[in-house]
Image (cartoon, rainbow, N blue to C red; front, side, top):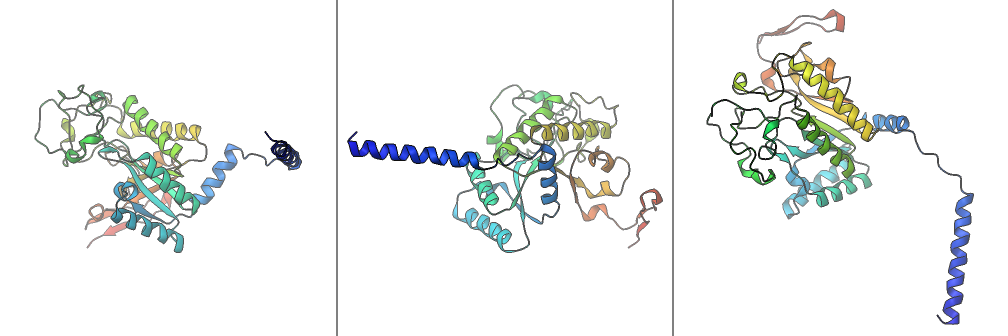
Length: 314
């Protein structure tokens, strides 16, 4: 180095030292405890008004998807909308692009928009080739279309399940056994990946046993058909909620339930009881299908829960 360059290096080194000394004079900001972080997340999540974004809109880099994606974000920036639900795992399996999704989540965070990952749980076609032992089977074949035939690329390659006769619902969907520890760990592992990507909340759908199709013909690899379905699901709710909060204390966990589950104190036949899921999840969203509230529906009053009678006679 020339003498001038050496002098300049000394000046820079001195400035750096002074900056370091100044930093030492600043009081250290105390880190928040897990309890404080969770309280902050609960407070922020208590007032969310969101919109839904499909996996294609979230990940596609084409002009059409980008235009719609920007429109949704602009609505969240200029109206009372402050949250976006994004599909990351649908009935065909995990479906997202890490790079594109991370960039989207960074943009949402920069604009203070709450990001919710929608995770389909037990209806999942992606693992049939590599983990057939997780899936419902049947003793004899039944001709049913494959609901995810156009998304077979989401299925990891393998031969283990090619000779299996899988049970499918009326739409041709495949179902994991909710009692299977392997299936549960798969859902948990995927959920942790979504936390690492930066989602504020995980919203679980299809957290239940199947309801459509010849369910009496389904052969479960683990569930013994004697243990009540709600007992199986309650154990999953508790296990999942505890595991996710152990991984990230301030993650918000929510679930989509059949609207009819709000009307029935007991199990509606798919393992969903409101009193079970409420202990492990922060929020519940009811899917209000018109078919659940048919003409002639009558529900007696429930004084213990301060609920009036409901009579839909027309």
